[in-house]
Amino acid sequence: MATSGARLALPRSARPRRSQAERRATTRARILAAVVESIAEVGFQRTTAAEIARRAGVTWGAVQHHFGGKDGILLAVLEDSFRRFSDLIQEPGAGEPLQDRVARFVAAAWEHFGSDHYRSTFEILLHYLPDESEQQGPTLQVQMLRLWDDLFGRLFPEAPVPKRRLLERYALAVLSGLATTQALAGSAAEPPALELSLLTDTLTRELGGPSPGSQA
Amino acid sequence: MATSGARLALPRSARPRRSQAERRATTRARILAAVVESIAEVGFQRTTAAEIARRAGVTWGAVQHHFGGKDGILLAVLEDSFRRFSDLIQEPGAGEPLQDRVARFVAAAWEHFGSDHYRSTFEILLHYLPDESEQQGPTLQVQMLRLWDDLFGRLFPEAPVPKRRLLERYALAVLSGLATTQALAGSAAEPPALELSLLTDTLTRELGGPSPGSQA
DNA sequence: GTATTTACATTGCACACAATAGGTAAATGG
DNA sequence: CCATTTACCTATTGTGTGCAATGTAAATAC
Image 1 (cartoon, each protein chain N blue to C red):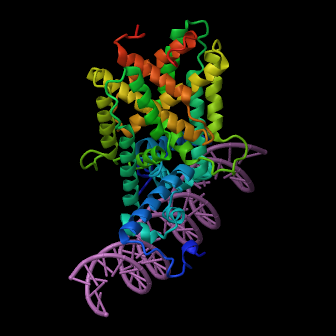
Image 2: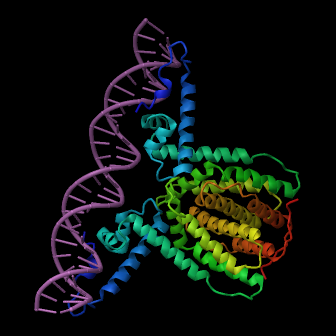
C-alpha cells in the first residue's frame, strides 16, 4: 500500500530541493484540484476524506495540515471557484454594442457554469444550506449572489434596476439549470450551444428595449 | 422519549380497529411525506434514517418493513414524484391556441418543479448518479428524461423534432434552475412569476414560427 | 376459536468516516 | 551548524448511520 510510490527513490543529487513555499503551493493546488475532480466525477457524497487524499496523492494528514479539516477544504474550494469565476468575467468591454456584450457574457459565464468548478460549488453550497436560525452574517449562498449581481450590474448598466434583477436571476437559473441537467443526464453531453443562444436572445431582447413581449 | 405518545391511551371501544390495508396505506404515505419534507427542509445529507422515522412518527423498523431499506424508500419517493408530476401535466388541452397551451404547461410544470417533490427528486437523482460502468438498463435519470420527452411531444406535436428536443431541454433547464437557485437562495422566495413568463415567451415564440431570432 | 400472516417496535452490531495525537524528515533562520 | 518551524505521515479513537435479527400485538384466514 505504498501510497507515495511515485516519488521516493530519487538519488539525492536529482532531488530538486524545492523550497517550502513551492511545496506548499503545489500541494495545496493538488488537493484543491482533487476535491473538484472528485465531486465532478463521483459526487459530493462519495467525496470522502480518504478519496480526496487518494486523488491528490497525499495522506489525509496533509489535507488537515493545510486546510484544517473537511469544512476548511470545502470552504477553500468555494473561494477558489469564486475567484476563478470573477477573473473570467471581469473583462471590460464597455462601449461594445449590446448584442456583443451579451454574447460575450453568456460565453464566459458558460465557461464557468459548464466546468467542474461550478459543479463543485453547486454541490457544496447545497450541502451547506444554513440550518435555519444558525446564520451569522450573510450566508455563502448570498455572498455569491451579491458577486453575481455586481458583475451583471457592471456589464449592463443601462438597464433599469428591477428589470436587471429579473434578468440576472433568470440568467443564473438558466446557466445553473443547464449545468445541473447536463450533470444529471450523464457527462457525455456536448456544450449546449443552442440553449445558450436562446438565453442570449432573451437577454438581448429584454435588455434592448422595453418591448413587453406577451404578459397580456 | 415516548415516540408513540400521541396514540396509545385510547379506550378500547374508541380505537377504530382499522384494517391492515388502511394502516399500511397511511403509514406508507406518512413515511414518504416525511422523506420529502426532510429533504426539502434540511437537505439530503441530514435526511438520515433516524430523522425520517422521527418525522413520520414511526420507528426505523417500520420503514424497513415497508420499503426494505433506505435505497428502497428513496426509490419509492422518486416513483411517487414521477407519478404526481405526470398526473399534473396530463390534461389534454389539444386544440387550444399555442400561447394558452404553453402558458398552461409552464404553470403546471412549475407547480411541480417549485414543490418539495422536485426538490427531493433532484437531490436523490444527484446522489444516485451511476458510478460509471455499473449501469444495468436505463438509469433513473434517463427514465425521467424520457417521461419529460413524451409529455412535451404530446403537448406540442406541431414542432419539428429537433427544435422540440431543444426547447424541451431548455424548458427543463430553466425550470430546474429556477427551483434550485430558489432553494440555494433560501426558502423565503416568492414564486418567480416574471422569470416563468420569460420562459413562456421564449417557448411561444420558438414553437410558433421558425423566426431564427439572432444567430448572426 | 385457532393458526397464520401482517404491521410494526427494540436491540445489538458492523462499518465508514472524520478528527485527534504524536511522529519524522526536510527546510529555514540565526 | 544548531534551533525551530514547516510539511507531511501513521496510528488510534469516537461517533454517526444503516441494517439484520428478533419480539409482539393486532388483523386476517379458515
